Length: 148
Image 1 (spheres, rainbow, N blue to C red):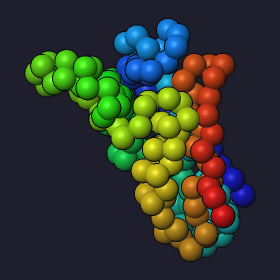
Image 2 (image 1 turned 45 degrees about the horizontal axis):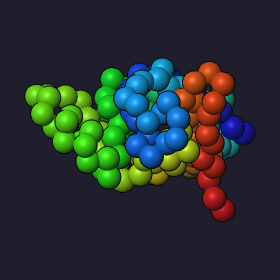
Image 3 (image 1 turned 60 degrees about the horizontal axis):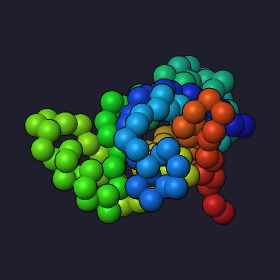
Image 4 (image 1 turned 180 degrees about the vertical axis):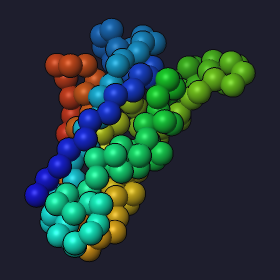
């Protein structure tokens, strides 16, 4: 069985070597979908009986591990030294430094790596992260899928 929870957040970025508009500082209303797989919990008396995982728990983990960090932050590539140096002049600015340019594809990959270990098989139902879908706009998204 698979379940999916969607969360939204706002963040700024730029793609420094992009040939078009995305090379400029700008922001997006991102959405992230977290898809988990596992067996339906059958243990009598558990609050989660009949579920793969409580959706509120999926949300709590995603917020703690990723969304609260990225929300209203500027996602900047470590190699984008001009912008990184500028952001460091802003006292208390919420900046997330990434080892890759903040494209939708790279953000989905980074999010998957962060979230995958956070969704543990607590109930013995083979819970695991299957997919992170990151929407950069309502019409553009990237999927990072579990391998193997």
